[in-house]
Image 1 (tube, rainbow, N blue to C red):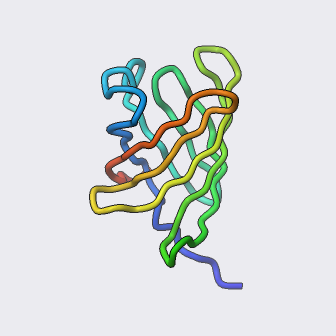
Image 2 (cartoon, rainbow, N blue to C red):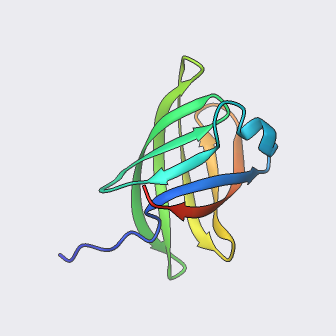
Amino acid sequence: MAKRSNPFRGRWRIVSTDVWDSRSLDEFEPAQITFGPGQTGELKFIAINASVDHRISTSDKSPIAEFSWAGDDDGTPISGRGWARRGPQGLVGRLFIHEGDETGFTATGPTAK
């Protein structure tokens, strides 16, 4: 089976969400999602710092990254899931916090990791 390339690879800067303003997103460090080698990655926004497990698939004939994430929110365990697809300005997607908020997001980039 041929290995597919990852069109999402790199560090993407989360610039907006439907729920939190950019100032809140960057409260502790710049908000970002990273799709790394294999199926690894990172997610950082507000006080959330998490590892990402992603898979690349296809939806409506375009690549989509589907992922789960787990980490901590200022020391409290937290997890969730999400998806992203490439759009004209970068990534568009949705983040879900387990038993919590959900939001659409946009991200620019990527920068090499």
